[in-house]
Image 1 (cartoon, helix red, strand yellow):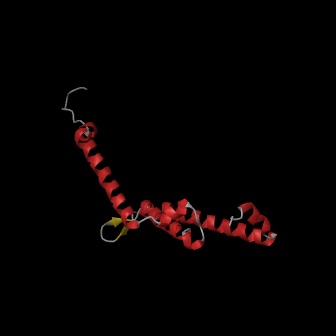
Image 2 (cartoon, helix red, strand yellow):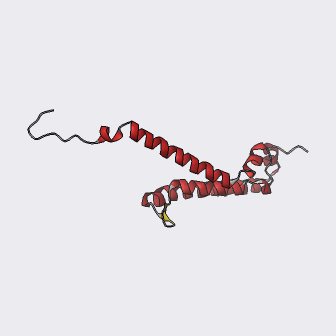
Image 3 (cartoon, one colour):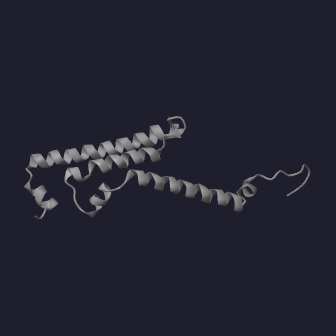
Length: 134
């Protein structure tokens, strides 16, 4: 069975239904903009702490947003295709290990650059002896 196109679906709606669908899309887009604005303007600059040692950041907010979008568009809502099948089969536990691995890799690279790139020597201000010229 072939799925109807978006154009055919839109054409089948009455003007009142089109107006309602358009307003729903505007409200959803507005809520997204408002949510991101609140995250960036009010939450991120204050470095709120979550739990005993973590910090609430834009990254945590984006992760929560992504998981919410994943739930909103999962197979329970009739979306099919290879992308949606892949998204449905994403294992959150494995994803967590990948994130930890990327963090460890980033930390290791930063440590190597600091150690062998002599960052401390490059960025430490030199103190001149009194009475000497550069």
